[in-house]
Structure formats: structure tokens, C-alpha cells
Image 1 (cartoon, helix red, strand yellow):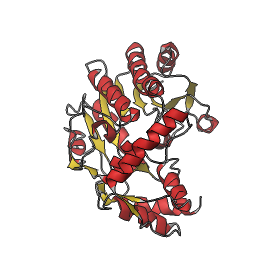
Image 2 (cartoon, one colour):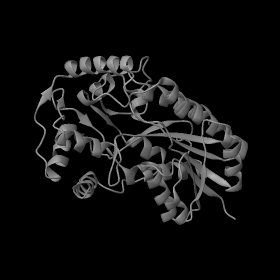
Image 3 (cartoon, rainbow, N blue to C red):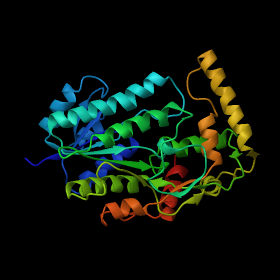
Image 4 (cartoon, rainbow, N blue to C red):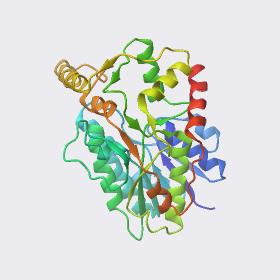
Length: 337
């Protein structure tokens, strides 16, 4: 029996796209998630329901049984608001247990899904490379804990376990459970506003491209590409967008009016800080409609250079879907929601 690949969070948006890409090229695939995904089992995917932050023994045994050769660690707690302990358990402790399980099961490769937010310092980043430093302060627990997890995953790289971290930015596409639905819901409720001067330049990542990048990184680790080992890379569509122009393209394409009303960045930041205090004091469930982190994200540019990743992969990655095609597919899907 040949070895297989395993995906944590294989029932999720990115994890599911990675599963699809692996199956499409004939690989044996396993998935590890907290929930049940019978649709994966129906496609021949071996599944394990597990709490990744718990005892790694069950995960270790599963990885051994499946003879896993590459583990794609996509599972994480997303969002920008909530108890610190929840993020630390789901992101930091879970990643530590995943690394332990990989070592115990002698899995040779680990591809860790990170986020550009781990290096977001509240200022503009335009065509930035992977040498951006980690900031000294974070405005939300998600980027802080993802940064800790990324550091742990990269520090684990050695002769027995090759590791790499990928930072896809604003993943979107058909089936998107977060970015596009939230955007449209806010627009429909009349609560969507341009934050800042409306000129921010942003990189986006079509979900199929993000999956292809993960497979290319794994292939590079397998083939001994030295510049991948123990490093983090941004992955996104090569062409950036003017964020609010792209958002209006989505709105117009789905039959909605464009957003024109503006809120100055400092005003949105102050409102986000006030709302965070209110939500914490009153113990309100869910995320505030604005936070300091989101205000800074929406008002600043964050676009990233794909050349370092493509060079490190030695030509194993070429963008599968252009931004124009990705946007058209997404509009067609969103129009039928």
C-alpha cells in the first residue's frame, strides 16, 4: 500500500479544495476534523474525528495506519474576536500536537496553512515579500496565535520532518463560507461602508489556486527543494486589486448597487475599539460589526509578491486560475445563492 496525504480541516473551504486537488491527481487522502463529513467518506476519503489540541495519541495512530507522507495542517480557529484561550487552544496547542504526532508517526512532510495577518503591523504592505518581520503587538488573538503556531511549525523543520508555511490572503471562490457571504449580507443590510480613502491595494487568493500552491509546496519538500524548508511564503493571485473597486464589481455582478458611503479610517478604528469594549463588558456573543483589526485591514494596502514562492518551488507552481476568471466564477456562484 502506497502512502497517502492527510488534511486537517478537510471538510472546510480550503481543506476541502486541497482534498479535491489530491483526489484529482489520484492520491489516497485522509481527513482529520472535529465534525463528521459523510460526503468525504462517500468519496473514499478516510476520516478521523478528533480534537487536535487533545491527546495526540489518536492522531498519531491514524497517521500511522494511513501511512501518511504529507500532512496539510489547515484546521484553525478563524475570526477576529473571542476569548484568548479558545484561539490559543485551537491554533497554538493544536499545531504543537500536530507536530508531535507527525514525529511520532514518522510523517516526513508538514505543510502549515498560515495567514498574512501574522506579519500585519497596521501599516501599508505593497508587493511585500516573506521577509516582513513579526510585529511586536497584535490587535486580535487570531493573528497572534497563528504567528505563534507558524513559528512552531517552521522551527520543527529538520532532517526527519520537512516543514513549510503558506500564507494565502483573503481566500474566495464558489462555496466560500466567509468573505463573500459576509460582504453580501452587509450590503443587503445597508451596513457596508468604504473604510479609509478607498484606494487600498490588496492581494486575493482564489481557493483553487491556494490548494494548488499547497500541493506544489509539498511536492517541493518531497523533491528536496532547499529554499522551501522551514520558511513561510505568501500565496495569492499574482495580480492585486483595488479592494473597494473589486468589492463593487462583486456587488454589481450580483445585482446590487455599489457601495459609495465612506468612513474615515481613524473613525472606524475608534468605533471598533468601543464595540470591543461593549461586547466584552456585556458578554455579547459573536463578533462586533467593527473591530480595530478589521478597521486597519480595510483601510490599508496589503499586497504580496509571489516570486519568492514560485522560485523556491522551482517552477512547480503556476497560477491555475486568473483573477478575472476567478472573479467571474465567484459572481456566478454568488448570484445563485
